[in-house]
Image (cartoon, rainbow over all chains, first blue to last red; front, side, top):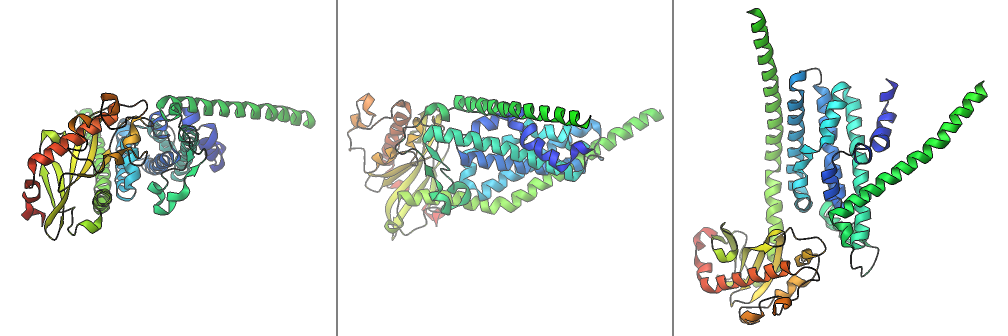
Length: 228
Length: 214
């Protein structure tokens, strides 16, 4: 299927079928954890890893598993990977794990992951499933980062604060203070800020899509006329 | 009869398959657990040690506070769970204790505290280890967010007097935050109760279970 080319999978994950902006799946962690860039990056990468691993293994066993038990089998795979990643983060990214707290184990309930397993990975080859999982995860991470960046700048006037929790002591100086002596804008940090921010991001994506679709349509019409 | 047998076999095979997945999944988790057990314990220990050392600097004591520890259950520590008391000593003489305590009246529930008290009853300092206070308002009790928590260092049961152990809104000596009075009020109360606990216990905190600490 030409539809399943790697390029197409990439475009789907990053833009056309983005989990956060188009499918609107997994919003609970997306909204809760996107208060700073570093938190967003932590959750985004953890979700990407889970998506990649679960998609690949679901595809691997797709001919083994019977339809009646496919959902419990998928859930078991996803839950195992999430628990493993949760433990690994606790071991090696202890402070970040403490901040992200319950949202790492809750990746299990991110319907985007079961959704990809059921709708895509269980019907395609391992390499395609892996690429789809990876790209979906990266698309989700990008949305998290954008939202995190917006909320962090508006909310506390900084960018990359607490980077040392993820990248070690060397990253302590990475924090960029954009607005010195900023009193903070509470709305951006609290949950309403997340909803408003996500709404704005979706709106921007829709505007871009609309702009793109117009010239493309006219060009293709023009080509047809020339051929005639 | 054979149709029934076929159904039975089908069910058994399906169940077996699911069981195999369960075993595989569980072994993955078990393996990761084994591999991360050590790093997790070390990270937890390191995080706690950093906090302990920030409160009781290395040069005032010469024992390993992390292992010189007893567990105490007392309502004045804000919890019905046993709380840890770390002891600092210099050449066997008591220097200070760091008490785990909970401020149960936080705006977002329990606020976990580490309260360091010098042998003479003066506060060396307080740190918040876990809280769910409102970001941007109540989270100013966190050392990373503001210097407020440092205003507790050097205080004791007599400084200020019992009436002063309140936030300014309640007529006391401690600042509250704009828009958040409940959080600092809860912390002040918890610290005051811990100090009372310390005075009531006296030197028994340093003796009890000493042999286990070594």
